[in-house]
Every structure is written in C-alpha cells, then in structure tokens.
Length: 429
View (tube, rainbow, N blue to C red):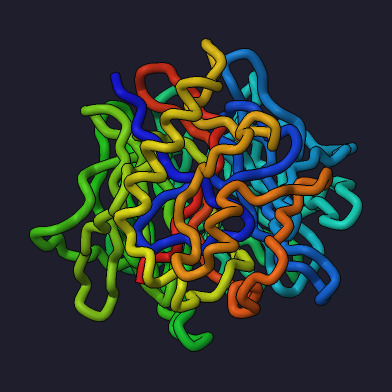
C-alpha cells in the first residue's frame, strides 16, 4: 500500500491549520509502543522548558518501566532513570494543581495482571514513590484516562482481564489532598461496564464541572454512547445521538479544548480508525474534523495530550505562500524517505538526524519575498541541531508565539503494525 506522508514540522516553521505534521526531534526517540501515557508538563518558571512526559507502555516482547521526556524548547528526547517505577501499560497518568511538580499514575497492567496502585513521580528528579491511599480501593484494572476536577480524580469501570471489563459500576474518586478513595453511586443510569473508554473533564469557568465518558468495549461489543457525569449533582446523563457522531470505538483518545471534547482514532469491529470529531456541549452536537493532508495512520492505544509550542508568528510572508505548498512538501518528504528509509523500520516516519536530510528542503514553505531566504531553503544547522537563521532575515520572522497543538505518539493498527512516530496538529478552531 502507498505510504501517506506527513510534512515535517521544523523548529522554524509554523504549522498550517488542519495539517498533521511529523514533529522533527533530536536524539534517540522512544521505540514503538502501545498503552503508554503522554502528559504535558509546563515549565515551572521562565527558564524551564515545557515538556511532554511519556510513561510506560508495552510492545509484544516487553512492558516498559521507563520514562521518556521530550523537551519542547530543544525538541530533544531523553530517558529518565526512574527508580521505584513499576512498569505498566494502559494506566492513567495525571497531574493536579495542589501537587505541583508531581506526576501520578493509577492502575494499568503488567504481565502478571492488573494493578490498582497509585505511584508518584517527581518531575524534576524522576524519582518514583508509592502513595498510600486510604478508603475503599478500586479493584485492579486498566484505565487509560483520568478525569481531574480540582484536587479530585475520577475513574469509572476499566479492563479486568482479556476483553472483559471490571464488574463494578461505581465512580471511584481519588482525593489527592486527603489521599483517600471514595466509591460514588451517581443518580441516573450508570453506563454499562466497559474498558478502552475515554473519560475527560471539562470545568468551564471553574464551576459546573462535567466529565465526559465516551465509547469503550465489553467482550465483543463496542459502544458509541456519550455520557456526562455532572460532578456537583453527582448524576449521569446520556447524551442523545444526533445524525453526525463518531462510530462506536474503543482504545481511542481525546481531550478538552475550549470546553469542547475532541476524540481521535481507536478501533471497532472494522479495524483501527483515523477519524476525529469535536463535541460542542452548547448544542449537544458532534462535528467531524476535516484535515487537509493525510490523517495519522489508523491507530489505537496511542498516547495523546495537548502541548504548547513556540512557533513563528503568522507573518505576511508566510501567509502569502498558500497551503498548496504543503502538498509539495508531502511529495518532497516522500522522495527523501524512499531514498533514506531502511527496510524493516517499525515506523514509516522515524525522525531523521540532520545528516540524513542533506541539502533537500524537506518543507517548502519559505518567505516568498526574501531572495536571501530562498537561497537558504535548507537552513544551515550548528552541531546542537539548532536551526540558524540566514543573516539579514526579516526581523518579523524571528517573532514567535505560543501555539496549542494536539500531540500523538505511538499506538498500533489492527494489522500488527506498532508505531513509534510523533505527530502534531494545530488545535482545530
């Protein structure tokens, strides 16, 4: 089958809307894996980089007890020594405002079976500690997502073993101030037990918190239902289906942006999926997201989060280029890849070192009005992998701003391919 290729997002490029990019990174990157988590960790002060922390995961031969960190300023990957971490996959990872500098994981699975422990990682040192939690602990389970509301974290159902979910229908609330578990029985009709579902919280204007619970599976049944847990009232509500809505799916992922729910990927009876939808609670309606270039290859059990990335401002010179250039970028990328790809590579889009790319412009969007920049299509790099701007560049090009992007790493399809790619998409407006 033909490889659909994504343009590379270099450090000096602004992502065009509705295009998925391969994020160009420096150094060794995480190998192919599934069931890992990705958490965005903002820098604590102006000198500290924003980071993405990838925890755990598995491939067919092992369960990872490692942690990878992507520095979003240098775009370089690094592994953390993580003493005390119990390797796992299909766990939940989360941070809470009342415990700054700490990343927590709950549950997940190992070769021996499922877990129901809570572990904490110091994001500065990488050291892990076990958290003692009082109260009625949820039965061991896989649970890919965590719905955080203030200092409380909510879980519902999850995987027990094989394709069967745990039996209980309680909502389990972890209080991270008292470190205690409470089992809640909300009013209304509880969703059926399931695993591989999505749970994500929206707290508009810091009140009236709602938790969205979407999809999942039980045995051979895939669900397409969307339930909303009203946290203050402690009640479940089923959202009535409209004409447009995501097909039934499990092992998908999602996030909240501007109080709207975005979901991507997953799998159902037909196989792995590559579509994305946005749910707007104002009209209780779903919209399918359309992309300009290829979507990420169909996948499930991938890691996903929202990141903040410094990108060039939308200067007039860039705006004048037009997005048709991106189609050329894909073709360009393909040419380089066909020449450079090593057979048997797990991913069709591994990161390249600088020397692999040579003098080709991987990405043709350049300021049209600067002959100087035209002559520097492949910008020189110094040894650190930093891009150096050609001298005499328009100062407007040097201006940067923060942009919100969706970040995806890894996952697998239903044909047995496991991915090791890092893809980003400018947050759809």
